[in-house]
Image (cartoon, rainbow, N blue to C red; front, top):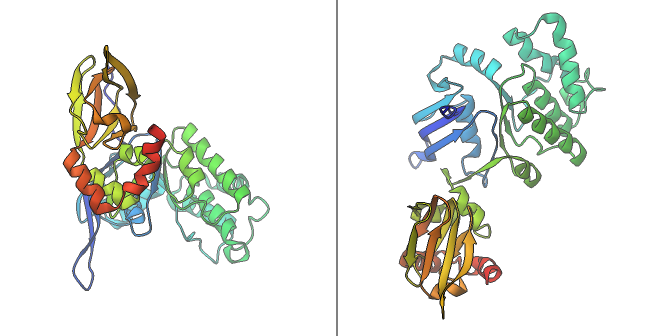
Length: 350
C-alpha cells in the first residue's frame, strides 16, 4: 500500500500576535491546517477574521509568532530574506488584493519581471510568454499600457498574469476577482480551474460565492480560528461566531461498521456526522422503523420532531461524528440567541 502523500502546505499550532496599545492582539489562534498537492482551496471569513494573515504565513510575507509553517518541504519563516525571495519566486505565484504592479513599467514588463528576477526562462522566450499570459486574462491588446492607464479590474487581471509568469506549483490569491467585471471574472475562474487540472495547488481568499463553489474545499475562519467544516455545512443559517462556538463545544465520537448505539431521548443536543453513514431507527409497535440516514455534514438536533424517543444509531460504515450533550446544547441556545436561526433547518427535517 502506498503511503499517503505529504501535505503540500502544513500549518502546525500557528499563532500570530501583533502589538497594540492595550497589549498584544492574537490574530491567529493555534491554527492546524494541511493542504494536499493539487488541492483547490478557498479561505473565507468576515473582515478581521485572520484570512490575509493566514495567507501571509503561507507565502512567507509574515512569520508566525509560534508554531511551524511548511510549504513544499520548506519552512519559509526560517529562510533569510534573500533565500526567501528566491524560493518564493519559483514556488509561489501571489495575486495581491491591491495589485502591487510597478507603475513605471508596462503591463508586459510587469509580467516579465518575475522571469527576469528568477532567470526562469531563456531571455528570448520571456516576452512571448508574458504576451500569452496577458492574452489569457483578456489584456492582449493592452500589453504596452502603464498600470495607471487601465482600470482597476484590468490591473487585477495583469497581477494574475504576473503571478503565473514562472509557472509556480502554488498559486495564492487574495480576492482575485474582487475588482473584475463578470465576464473577466469568469475568464479568471476558468484559468484557475485549468491550473488545478494541471496539478497546481491553488489557495484563494475570497468573498465571491461563485469562486467558493468551484473550489474543492472551503476553510472558514472566525476570530482567528478555523471553524469545523462539517458544522459549517450542516448549520449554514448560523453566524460565523456561533459556528465557532459550536466547534469549541463539540466532542468526537466513533462507531465501527455494524455496531449500534442507543441514544436516550433528547441526547445528544447536537450530532453532526463527519465520516461514514449512520442509520437512525426509532421504536414502532412492532420493533423498529428506519427514521433517517445521516451522511457527512448532516446534523441531528434535540429540536427534531422524532428525537423525543430513544433512537438506535447503526453504523452502516465506519463512522465518526461530533456531539454536543443536551444540557450544553440548551445552554448554548439560550445564550447565543440562535434558536430562531435553527428553525428553518428543523422545519425542513420535520
